[in-house]
Length: 295
Image 1 (tube, rainbow, N blue to C red):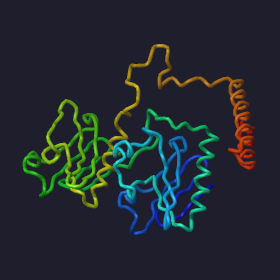
Image 2 (tube, rainbow, N blue to C red; image 1 turned 135 degrees about the vertical axis):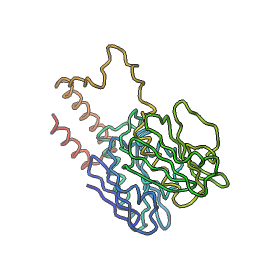
Image 3 (tube, rainbow, N blue to C red; image 1 turned 180 degrees about the horizontal axis):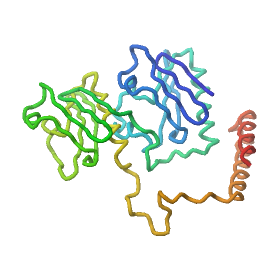
Image 4 (tube, one colour; image 1 turned 60 degrees about the vertical axis):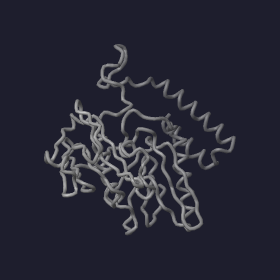
């Protein structure tokens, strides 16, 4: 097991998954505190890096495209401090951070985890029920319905119709954009058969955001809804050919001979990696023992 403990948070890796716990320091971002503990399966990772600075460094996880509804909903627009897949590291813990990176990279290598995109979410998204107040309204989501309520700052043209309740089945997509410069941000829901081109200020299916502290929390609402919408890369229902296996018909177990041949090939690959210096003696021994146990 590998672990790094910082004021910014604690990351623990047990060989199968990463456990990310935000720190309790007052400087830890509100979004990370609200989101809470995350468990990231090894199969959801595309890589990890560590950037050193004079006074502090930063660990960064890179998830496979499409694995996390939060990253999908925010589209790379989260600030570094709000990103749950980054960890600030004090300079006196650089050695620990480098060891942590090596452990993750070795596990990705030995488990042959691809860095390619996925067609289903590998993380569940924020827990529900969830309610956030920011900008010109409040957004709540209970897993089945989104409710938008307005405050005194809402434009009358939008608030006149009162609170909105959207059934999840009617939501086609959800977007979150932070405020940037003089441009306001928003949380917007696109409803089936009722598209709108109105700006968020007047759109009854949007909450307008002005760049205040709680704005990023609206991203959690977006992610919770996104996690329950069809994955954008999932094949459309009915597209499978007649001779293809369906989701309800699991693939048959491969024959034992095929498993044995695959393990032998993997042993040969590990030997080549060891000979070329990619794996140390200790790493090669541990990996070989793990494969031999499966044979």
